[in-house]
Structures are given as C-alpha cells and as structure tokens.
Image (cartoon, rainbow, N blue to C red; front, side, top):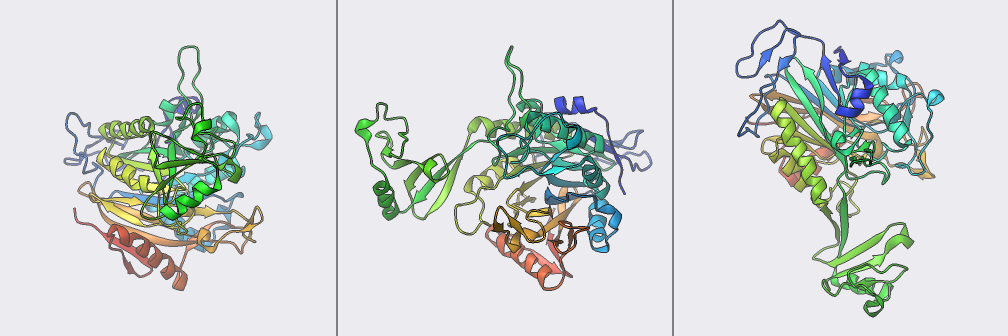
Length: 482
C-alpha cells in the first residue's frame, strides 16, 4: 500500500494549497527524457519554458491514474471488516500511482468543533469523523476535490477544520483555500513516476461558499473555487406564447427597461425583444429567462472572469508539473428528462481546459453515470457517479423521496500512460452496498447482469462522443493510439 505524508502544516495548507509525497521510491536514476529521480526518490518535474507541448504529460511510462466519483459515505469506519468485495475495489485503487475522488462532506470532530452548521447547505450536512478521512487514505485515495455544494455546510470554520483534517490524514486537496486565489491553486501529489497537479472548481455550489480575495483592509474569505453560470430556458414559439400568457408584460411600468421587473410580473427588454424574463421565485428559483429556439433545453453562459481564472490556473500548473487533472462539481444538465446529457457549457469548458494543458477532465456531482469523451487523445469523464453513496440509508429514502437505483450504480477507471499519453483506460463497474450495516455505502465490483448493464450504459452514453468502449471479462476497455 502506498503511504503519503503531508509536507505542509494545516496552516500552510489553508494558505497555499497542499502537497504530499508518495513514499515508495525506486533506486535513484535518470529516466531518459522524463525527468530525474532525486535523492528522496521523487522525480524532479521537467520545467516547461516558452512554448509548451500541451498534448502530452511528462509522467514516466506505466504511470497509472485512478479516477472515481463522489465520497458521500461511509459514516462509520469499515476497513476493519476486511470485506472481500470491498477489498477487491481497494486493491485496484491502491495499485494506482495516484487515486482521485471528490470529498463531498466536511471532516472534523464535532465534539471539539467551535463553530456551528451554516444557515444554507448543499442538501444536508454530511460530516466525516477524522477516522473516516484517515481510512480514505488507507484505502489508497491520494487527492480529493473540496469544491462542491457541501463545502460550506458548516461555515468558514467548518471548511478550515476540514482542511486541517485532510492535511493530518495526508490527503491532498484542491478547490478550497483561504481566498479565491488560493482555492484556484493546484493540490500537488509527488510520486516516483511524476508530479501530479489537481485543479478543482464548481458550478454547483452553496451560494455562501465561494472564496473571496482580500483588498486592502478587507480580509480574504475562505471558501471554494467557483465558476458562476447563467441559465436560459430555450422554448418553442408555442411555449413562448404560453410563457407570455402566464405573466403580464408591463414594459410601460418599468422605470428602467434594462432591469428585470419582479413581483410576479414579466417584461421583455426593448433592446432584446427575443428574451422574456419571469419571476421564477414563486416556483423556488430566481429570475428566469426564456428564448425561442429549435427545441426545448437549457443553455448556460459562464462568467468570463471566473472561466479565464480557472483556465489560467491550469496553464500555470502545466509549467511545473508532469500531469494536470482538472475536475469540476457540476450538476447542470441540458434540462431534459434524461440527466445523462450534460449542460452545453461543460463540453466547451472541458475542451478549453485540455487546450490549456489539462491531461484529463473529471466531472463529479450528478451521482449518476454519464459518458466518456476522448478529446485530442485525452479522456473527459462526464460522471462516474459515487464511489461511496450512503444517502437515504438502507431504505434509500431521503427527505421523503426514494432514491433511484441509478444512484447506487457507479464506476471507476484506471488510466495508464505511455509516451506521455493515455494508452489504455479500464472501466470497473461498481455497486453500493445497501443490505449490510457494517459496510453500508461501500463499493463492490458489479458482476453478472448488473455489471454488464452498467458498462453498456456507459458505452451508450459515450456514443455521442464517438468513443469506442469494448467490454471484456466484466471490464470496459478503451485503447488509444499515442
């Protein structure tokens, strides 16, 4: 099993990202064209100056990255069970050089916590005791994202306590920090085969959780990296007529026609007559915009400042690291009944991230399986669901609603590198345990009809991207040409 130690204190972690080192060094030697092994067994990354090769990583041949989904369980220690099904999953995770998951909960000892839960939350207050976070490390997980809709559930004090807990456990995190600038910095994990950087952000988040930079006497605000988005409803002409009928258009009553009139009324901006705004707060939302299009859907506009800042972080990370992973917490879909269709802005952002230097992209948050795209020879994983999923208890009931079976079906993948590019991707179908209290929410390999069903779904969801997935001996295989 790999062992890692944090080389920054929790205070430094809050201020400047996190770094950890894998302690399984080979004998010191140079690797031709792929960096040099230092005395401590860690490869010195190739420093990129001037024009960079965005198409390749500089990890050593044979480097393996494990990509998985959300950690939204377990809520009790489970490693002592030595469950054979769980151990098979953990064996795959531990054999990877670096393993990633999204840490979708706070982590601290509630008995000694000096803060309290926040007034807003991401759909509950999931909390891991420090022992659970230590077990994640023992399971082989190395790097995690904290940029998600549960990061602010326990306020700023809860986020700081979580950062300290992760640091003490030796887990590298990205996506959170003492300011927005720090939240956008990479978490870095050092291995004998390469230096790995993680950049994480969120478009789905608690409105109170974004970090903020200081300005003069104004102190910075701890929080997470976010990209703001604005959604527009695309409707047919007939549907637009119904929208207009549902509210009174009162352009003449609007003192400033560039402002949206609320209070249940709707008006069209004279300078953009194709857009209608409604006060959607009466339906549980905010102001909603409607435009006529060819087919009903949602379309999104990213905040340009946020988008550019995240993309710039990726390029900066590329200069001093061997492999850069970009992850995002994004629940947004195309607005269709089929939640396996991601929102339109995601593919645009993911392609931009790879163009900027990312070697792979991982989306987390939907808790359902989505497809896989290969862009310029690099993988984009649109969602693996959850690595651990404990929402709803054995009855699968949460807030009075029965959770769908799809939430308990997931996957993880290993990406093996050769010549700086992925050569083979192996996809392992998983299912969450719901019928045993001692390992409730834990993943086991899905076999038989269920395993085939999961892999065939991933293959089906990947078809729109032109991705060829072969199913061999219960594993999905993507073979790539370097």
